[in-house]
Length: 452
Image (cartoon, rainbow, N blue to C red):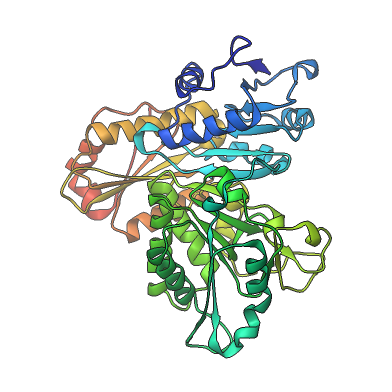
């Protein structure tokens, strides 16, 4: 590894910005705040470099910034050098080339794209979550839960007693649901949205058949927008949800509510997943992936030390994942990023137009992470400089040809114009204006592909 500079690091935003820019990495304001938090929490930053000798791999505390995806052996070497006091940050976390390294680590969270200033996803993780200082009692979230009236008040008895014992403010509400034995996605989403409007504190939603054994400190310690547990690393669970008191958190909640109201037959976790992708592509949604201690199953090993215990059957495998959950999003969610079928970033222009353009960035596997990142930045800067009359840009990373095909089909169904580019290609300065001037491309959906 290579140290970030001299032995002293001031942990200021200017220091981190200079460090990143000197290595061709750009982060937006929200991403820089998260990186600053990591440096304050774990220690000074260190840049990882491919080919580092084993004797150079000193990672006892601090933040390891990885700008280039390591080889398999490199990932093993990096992993073996870490301890519990070290965090790993990947500023180009949207690139699937980092997925293998991520699979070796426990993912802590990600920060969505920050527009033109930071059109990337910041991923961060480590070996395991660790406890931090305790927030003030006044900062604790307001716990909310709901259940069908047919269940009766005893359904939430253990939850109510545990919240009273821990001194947490709460609302437990029996709803007049359409079905007596379950809640639909929109009923749960509308309930949480109503609680958001009623209270000013961050919200922690839990299913009514859970029990809290400790105060839920982690989301507040991290100061995130949204926190959720993922079954088997890919499917979001709606049994434990945290919404911070931020605009990004509210945008996610409202989007989920709208999707749930529009698609009442679709199950809640999938709609939440789609709402998360839409929100993270349009604003720097700061997400934390909750540890198992917030989703423990009663009777399993470690449940006694868990923060939240769920009344589910204990089995050797996690319950919850739907076998019909779309295969397309599983690898991406497991890697803590948006997938190829979803837009990495959505930008809106000042043009009074409802026309949209989809840019497909392909052939990623043959290009370095920094070259891919530079292409993302070039596209977003070009759109900001001259949108060509398009009202919206949607940029998708498609590492495989099947991803390209599906992304094009989705774009054509939305009546978007489409441009295919590769990281090694030079883009004309009038990229979008040239496309807009082509009536054939705009009206018939012809794909424009720029090649050297």
